[in-house]
Length: 76
Image 1 (spheres, rainbow, N blue to C red):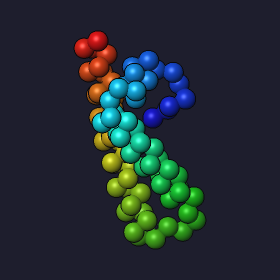
Image 2: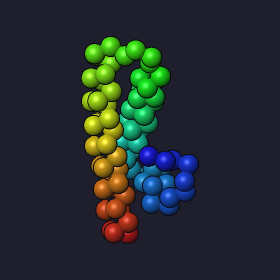
Image 3: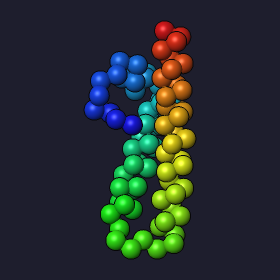
Image 4: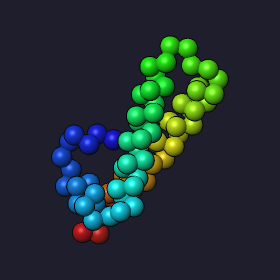
């Protein structure tokens, strides 16, 4: 998720919704770990499996974030 681009809905949810903040933080943590894994020259089997799993989890969290943003935009 690109946090450098201004988005009023996202900014409002970051201020007002603890669950949203936790999801964004989780997404950032997944992104950080995926970056670490991507820099490994010869990842072992466990690291490769972790990368696949993290990509799926990151996408799921991103979907939840965007669903919350969409719901918030519609309801306000």
